[in-house]
Length: 165
Ligand SMILES: CCCCCCCCCCCC(=O)SCCNC(=O)CCNC(=O)[C@H](O)C(C)(C)COP(=O)(O)OP(=O)(O)OC[C@H]1O[C@@H](n2cnc3c(N)ncnc32)[C@H](O)[C@@H]1OP(=O)(O)O
Image (tube, rainbow, N blue to C red; front, side):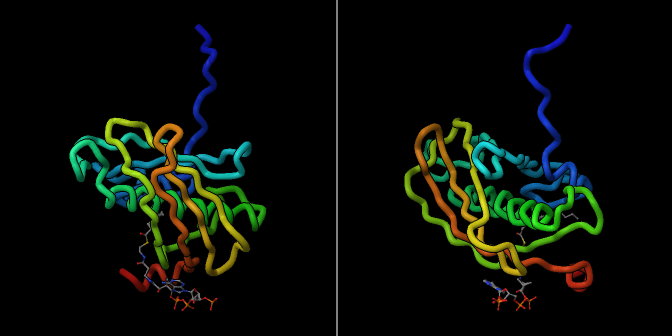
C-alpha cells in the first residue's frame, strides 16, 4: 500500500559522515544522541528535531542546559559544514570531506526548556563562509524560543585533524 507521507531524506550526518562517532551527532556512535540535521529551503536553514530523554533533566521538568549546548554544538557545526559544501557547489558526501570544529560557543538561555517536548533547532550562517564561520542557532519548544546561540566554527583540513590523534 502506498503512503501519503513522503519519506524522510537522509540526514546530513548519514550522507557526509556515516562513520562518525561523535557523541552528539555520530551515526555510528553506539549510544549517542544521534541528532539529525536537514536542509530546509523554506527557512534557508538547517533544521533538527530532538526530544530529550528524561535523564537529561536539570531542574525538575526542565532540560539540563548542558544538553542544549550539545545539541547546539553539533547542529551548528553541521550547519557550517553544509554551508561550506554549498559555497563550493559540492554535494555533502563528496570527497574530500569538509570538517569544521567548534571555536566558540555562545549561548543565551532565554526561557526554561521543558522536558517531554520535541525541540526544534533552526540554524543558519550569518555573514561569509570562510575559515571562520559564524552560525546562529535557535532552540524552539513549540512556539517558545528558549535558547539562541551565536557561535564560531573553524574549518580544519585532514592533516590538522590527524595531528589531534
Ligand atoms: C569522522 C567523521 C566526523 C564527522 C563530523 C563530526 C562533527 C563533530 C562535531 C563536534 C563539534 C565539536 O565539539 S569540535 C570539539 C571542540 N573544539 C575543539 O576542540 C577545537 C579546539 N581548537 C583548535 O583546535 C584550534 O584553536 C582551532 C582549529 C579552532 C583554530 O586554530 P588554528 O588552526 O591555529 O587557526 P587560526 O589560524 O589561529 O585561526 C583561524 C581563524 O579562526 C579564528 N579563531 C581561532 N580560534 C577561534 C576561537 N576559539 N574562537 C573564535 N575564533 C577563533 C582566528 O582568529 C582566525 O580568524 P581570522 O584571523 O582568520 O579572522
